[in-house]
Image (tube, rainbow, N blue to C red; front, side):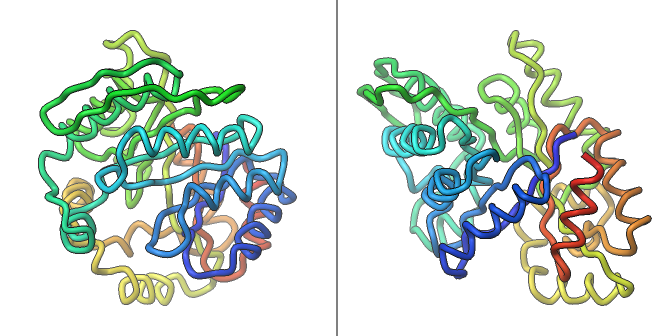
Length: 296
């Protein structure tokens, strides 16, 4: 199992985000993925960091699809792939109705169908092919000429059966969040693997994001997370996967404790079939990155 860092492309200065990537690379981690959080653009941040810091994969987890046409996103992704020398991975997803409808004023209609059509247009565009796609939810006509750029891998945020099927059939893997090792082993990996096999595609990557805290007070970490991010528990996609796990909120998915506890819990993700674990550190980062790197 590869181990990387997940960080929000939030309000920290861009130079600080580049420094985080350099620290992750120097610690021996495999990747850094940026989330989109209403500040710096995650894709552009990944491209900048990848150009500044060689020797590590960079990517997005995830870029929302509804506000971005496939032609525009394909152009950005190919640019990022060229800037990073082929070390960029594009993670996309429909996001949530609270974001797409509440902030963008775009109808959050049939997200699974939307993502399937989006990929149907996006993947050929990334390969440099002429596209003349007319779906129920989007139209994409044209082609992109990006000399020397290779198509980046594409991952899809997928938690439910329909999205996992789409990710297995049309993408290179999935990105999950707020999902523990048991649910990944019982639900995520079997569902996406079955879809990929049926479509004649290679075994998919399964990237699992989790918050990790090296601490002697794990209950305090969970209380803080419940206060800060508890509202995410009510997002429909997250609520469904939390219910599947019998959890009341996102704070219950945190891995917190001493080195022995963290080591045990991180290894469970590898046993569950996760190919790439993305950790979001809480508290002391340097010691946690060193511990994670030692488990690769």
